[in-house]
Image: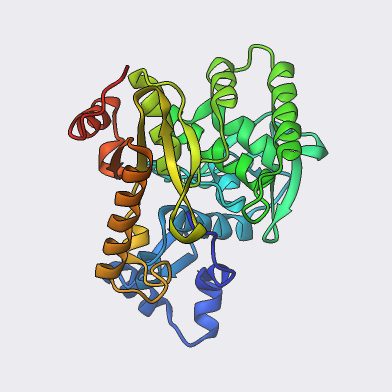
Length: 324
């Protein structure tokens, strides 16, 4: 998931703002009815054309901004709503309501688009992201891994660890150890909290070297299929002293695997001004070199292949790769 643009906050507009810029109540009502404006909640809007360009997490982020501008009292953004403020992915999640947490049982909001949580909330678990009060990264992950479906929980936890340890292509092992220790202590202190068994499993399984949500979910499905945990970002010596990195090294079946998100093919910025044909040719040449150099098998798969272990198994079998 790309980080939300600073301009995102400017796209979220209140009724008062629209009226001050020449709109009328009748025009606002008509724009919502005709689909030109999308209403997050009463009195808060975004142009539908702008919303269509946003990723699901960014759409939720915009909703969070609208709720935050209306909010009163001690509640802070939490769970999935804190996740988008931290730039964490929310794999395959439908984000209909904004999540807020308060330590006091007082009413947080009367709006139906807010999910209210009441839980202990020490000051160390509260911070500010983009001008909005929310739970800390560690507390956010703790809440997510207890409540999200496992694929989404794994993707978010991998991404959080990567935030802590990725130093521009250098991996900070000390930061990884400190992050995992802190999350482990939080889980230990939680005792028998709801979802704690899942949370402990996800925390143990997490690996921030997975660079995309699809890679995180691929790891999960490979585990479920019975493969040994793959090595991630495997270096392979390339031509002219270059080095290639492959997403997955499946040593138990002498094969490599790559999760191919569509973005690297359709996003012109990621193609570095190359045509789609040039990108595809470079990928084929890279794959041929790796096959020849290592004598290992090689499989590619995409988002449509990781929905279930069975769909990934079918895809791998087409490359003659099966669990040991």
